[in-house]
Image 1 (spheres, helix red, strand yellow):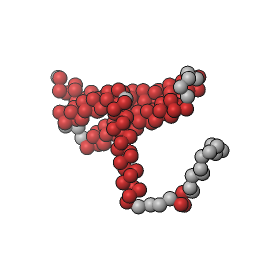
Image 2: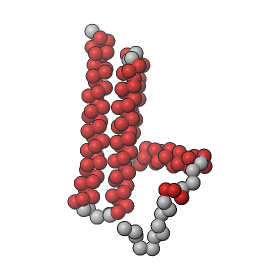
Image 3: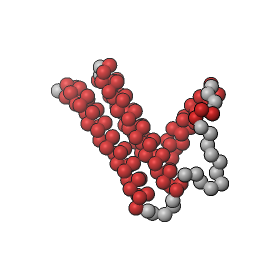
Image 4: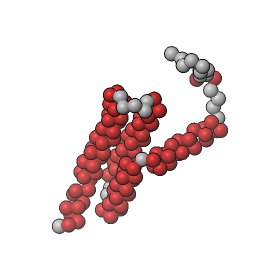
Amino acid sequence: MAFPGRRRKKFDRDKKYGLRRFSRSFFNSVNGVFMSYKDEQSLWIHLVMSVIVVLCGFVFHISRYEWIFSIILMGMILCAELLNTAIEASVDLITDRIHPLAKRAKDVGSATTFMMSVLAFVGEMIIFIPYMVDFFT
């Protein structure tokens, strides 16, 4: 369904490919990350926690596979938070009223980030608790 007064988008076969398009997409993506960090407090909390995980990784000399697992967990939290930010911005664009479906969309997006954070915390604890026990005993 098209919106009135809006031109139809070109089909994918009409898209031009090349370095210029790729560089624009890249810079738009980086800009999106910077805008999200500027506007979202929870991203800063995740950044601080990621720095703590990285510092603990260096202090405890975790293995290569533990590094890989930690980086994947940190990346998944970042991705979940960015998707939540996109959901919230889209809902805010569509309506400025409090609507039950808008609330549901925002709450589920937030719950996604929360659940990913809890799972990442558990995963990081599986890695770091044995090192902490050895360090403090």
